Length: 411
Ligand SMILES: *Cc1c(COP(=O)(O)O)cnc(C)c1O
Image 1 (spheres, rainbow, N blue to C red):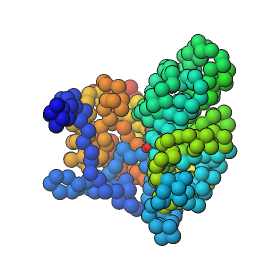
Image 2 (tube, rainbow, N blue to C red):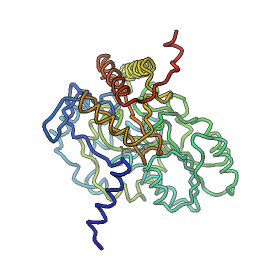
Image 3 (cartoon, rainbow, N blue to C red):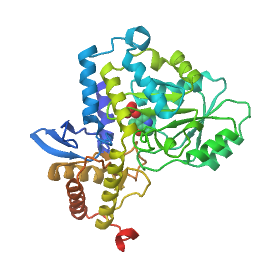
Image 4 (tube, protein in one colour):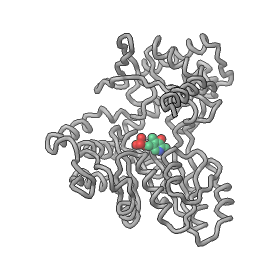
């Protein structure tokens, strides 16, 4: 076989569809993020990042950076081993305590990323529970899907955020079979929020475990940043809460929070936990500092909400179509992969605005979009520049505007 030909041909088909992924090469400016330098073929330029998941700017927070510097100076760079073989430092132990406290659970377990935490935890639970059936929300993240697939357990997909469909599917299963209901709290591409309590009601009625991915909610929702389950007062109802340290907490790593026995079970059986080097101690120290800060400070969350509302109001005034949702994510709908890519190229090259185009398979075909994530570190001037530039681009590309404005703006 001509392997090289195969690779090139496969890539050509991505180009033809307009969904070949091009990474923007950027250098974040600690202290003035979301501003960054964009490295191009022919030089560099200054840009404002509008698509970061460092939702609150904690990736440059002095408390986080100080904790990381201090840990590097004390312990050096890497952990030096798996958790079992010399890689468990005191920073890891403290972080796991902090996470259990954040979610009000008995224990927690750290992984090298949120992806790995979903893949390893769902894979291990679903494969080891005899005869387990996994009920998976139709919009679940790739990391959950891959974990479930890896487990080889039976899987049933229930309609997105639909407790009635979940109930129907669970009703058809034998009562004694182990069941695991897996879903997210805030879905990252549409920014919609799950009916957590209703899904728990249904799961409870059928004796099913619940597994909630709070990756896009931890740090952002709830009085202590414990996520949407905390905000809605339902943390205690979930069997497993899964989260990341890489998004609102601004560092890297993933975790589950659950009972002592469940965490110990995953710790003891999950290949994706056991056979990989522990996170660097400085990463654990930075994440702990970030969580601690956001437990006691709501200033970042409040300012983020204000800036999100400003972006939405200005988009409405400009007639730029965006998907309404109750979260911090602002999806601006385009609906075509090539146009989506051209718009973002134009925003980047001419206006210094970096928004990555979101195409299939991250979102369904025909729903290609710009996913804008306003943060407390975007200024009002940044917002004016964003919406002004989008408006110019909308005219130049002849894109449709919405005529219906929100009541609050029409008044
Ligand atoms: C980003 C993401 C993950 C993976 O988290 P990482 O820490 O980035 O690996 C898991 N679930 C969802 C819903 C995500 O969006």
